[in-house]
Image (cartoon, rainbow over all chains, first blue to last red; front, side, top):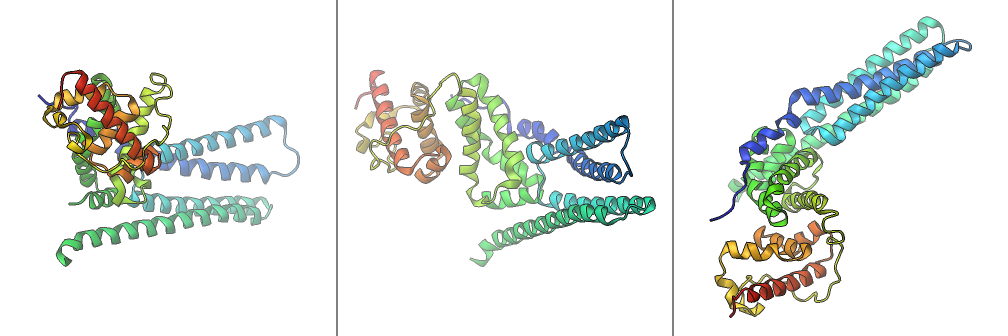
Length: 161
Length: 185
């Protein structure tokens, strides 16, 4: 008698569902994007304050910035270690990142202009994030295009002989 | 449909292709885990292996080399379970006979033991379990999983010559073990 696995392939796949769920991917991307945007926003507000701030205010800024950084770290950890982001997901996530970085940059620049501190530092930092997000988006598109090309080659292979 | 096409489709996000890939390789992965571990742990480790495979699949750069990549992950999971229990069992062994690496059947007369050819699978599996981890592993990968010597070398992270010498030693140990149980040519 041949020994067999107690868990069938179907059961194995079902147990993988939680890692593959759309909700998990959305949560991971949201945590990373919101964490990074929040960090930039809080840091910009903090650095844009005129004069020396009271100790409690500085502590509050530091805590809020650290809180946002923690969320960004959690999102990054999820995306690199826990949640598989396939090629199409990566394209979508990268464009969400582009949109979020541009929105955050605009928001921070507007706040800076309103305070009269000048939007240049905010635009510089936000621009860096936007360019990074754009680079990731281009890479994600290239990766997906390469996979689609390979899929067409493999699919067409047998017919072409 | 080839494994490479399934992997490419899965990497694009095709869940059906991923499910088919898991279904296709479910048996070989479990067989490897079971041959290296007891029955109680094999199922859990096989599940861990699949979780690691799914998480790492988007980063696999060579879809055509899915099998060695899969067994590299499987080996890591099994090693994690065995660590401590067989401390040092996974250390690289010296290559003592790099020329001994062709693929004879386990009962090939060239190996010097025709009796092995008639040993049924259950008894062979039982004998396998008595071998040290490195020798057992190389026999499982080479014979049961049908990986090439080069792929075995990649999975085990040792030179090809070491795989060949380990295979030679493993076949000899298996033959001796079977002979002790009364299977003689």
